[in-house]
Image 1 (cartoon, rainbow, N blue to C red):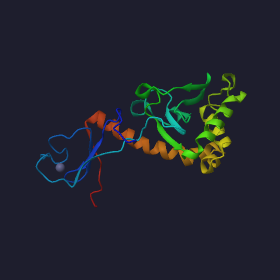
Image 2: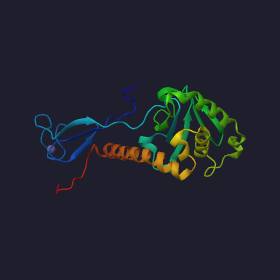
Image 3: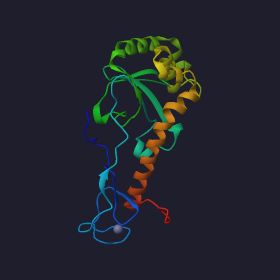
Image 4: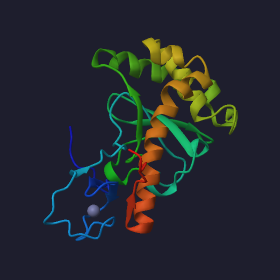
Length: 215
Ligand SMILES: [Zn+2]
């Protein structure tokens, strides 16, 4: 289901006289050449950048900042928290309080703006729920076992994925580093670009992408 996400700031991109301009709303004049935007032809008409964050969907691995939201509060990988959703969209996470289940509260949920790490095909949903239940029952996920660096939300999700035995997702989950490289980094890098662009626009009104003058 595609719809406009309420938290999407709606970043626009266009080219008037040369460089790419990013903004939240079109101004009357081009910030590069100061000519009116209305009457002249654009090299590239405005289009909206895809918003990288989603509401959690069933049977997925999802990321969010430990505190706050991606657009305003996220700085680096250390700030991330990872969770799993069930086939009915309940969010299951492991933290210092042990296993926690959050029922999706729509846009008020702390997970409302999540980054999707991966999801599975429909035929696997029952198996996914069963393995998730089994994994949650293990004593190693009691709150006493929690260690901030070595036995945390990420350890839990990887253990679940290994138990799941689902193609490449489970083989990458054999190693924290490999999973990070194959699944986490590509997502956070793409999201990081969007976030830094958003913050530049928020702070300056627009952002002009520097171009190589020889091109
Ligand atoms: Zn211009």
